[in-house]
Length: 85
Image (cartoon, rainbow, N blue to C red; front, side, top):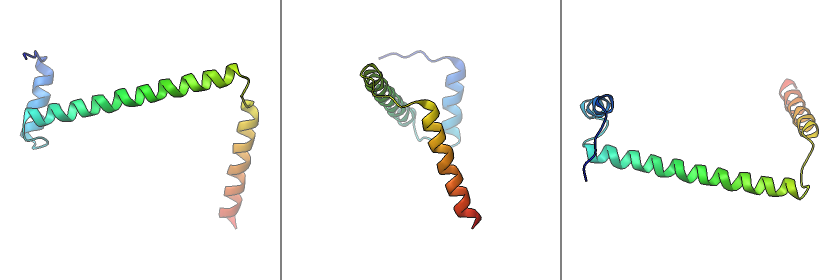
């Protein structure tokens, strides 16, 4: 496999190796691919949650936003009062 890397990325790789962050280019690429896989997993997870939320909205399973914020404000006031005692 042949990979072409932009000069600025090659400099970045060399800097990481020089500073001892990685012991080899292979180690660095393995870490980069792990991060990319994790990012893709999280994006898919978000897509799933959006789909579920959209389905709940279409079924009318929603809570008024003003009510949610009012409840949150009340909880914040309660917590603040506990710390003030």
